[in-house]
Image (cartoon, rainbow, N blue to C red; front, side, top):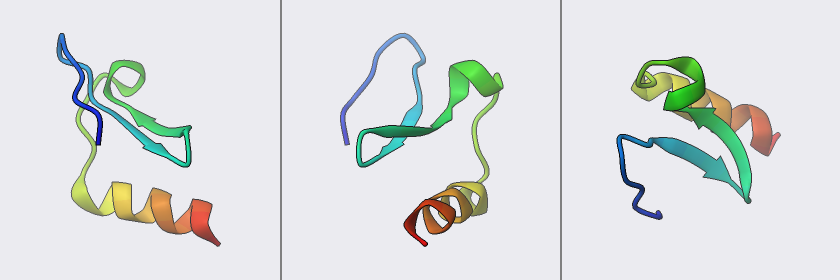
Length: 42
């Protein structure tokens, strides 16, 4: 994990952005992140 600043909340998997709070204009749901990771890992 790399700490951001200014309200940034990005989730990356293998250097690929899978969720950006800035782009979505919201925080992700817990299961949403798990589903995104599972989708990218298969």
